[in-house]
Length: 373
Image: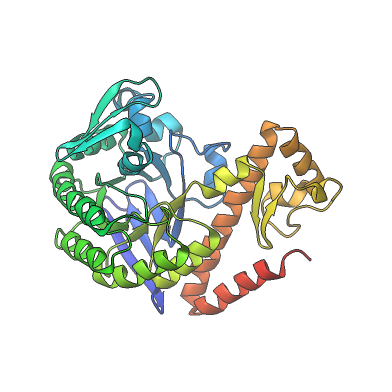
């Protein structure tokens, strides 16, 4: 740990990178997957469990915490780390994704976005400055600029407008953030599925000399091939010595292929959401525990797993819990999924250090293709 924000590259294998981010609250091993704790909690998990699975950092969301319980209240209660009993690093999203996902409830202008709360209908305004202020009240360690994220496909004119607005908001966010030695603010590259806009966004953000950079506006409706194409053209235009964060991604295959191209950090609701809907991620691929074929299957999901939920409970019991809509089913399968994601990330880090990343990817995908024994 350190009193300042530092990123070190420890190994490279092709474009895949193994590194670490050092901050006052802890060290983040990269490539890293950040479990999503939108409202101050990783759903269906205890904080200690999340940590024991190998997570160095979790994510919180400015928009949701602003509405409930309120950033000022969280600050009065000691900040998000104290409030949520997570003393390790926290990254907060700026609320930009909700500008897209709640488009029916908002009005967008140069100064920021005005929207009605989906909780109680109250009107709120979120500007770049207010987003940074809220993230400061939450006391998060890595803060994100406010940006406008749009769904794909979209017209080029609309993509360019949102990208240029996000660049102007990045400058305002950086000015509001100022100098905070133990913390970082990341800029967010936008540009949709337009290679030249992605490069322009990356180059102009790079000139701002921020502590880290994210790629946003992907996995928002486009096929994986387009996402990977955008990473291929964007990452070379981003600073090599700064961490690179792909926002809101993704499936295990997305993680493998994005690391191959040089991404260092990920977050996604997929493993927790899937667990609440009866889906398990394992070394054998994705299993749907709702399926009747599991009803009398006494085998565990993975008898070799270090995760008790995957190793010690039968598929038949998990099927029963899911079909009966029992809370324990969501808890166990979320545990299984986050365990697998962290297992995958540790394997990625080890493979890059050993200089055998391509072999590791091939072996993981072979396991998925082979399926259950």
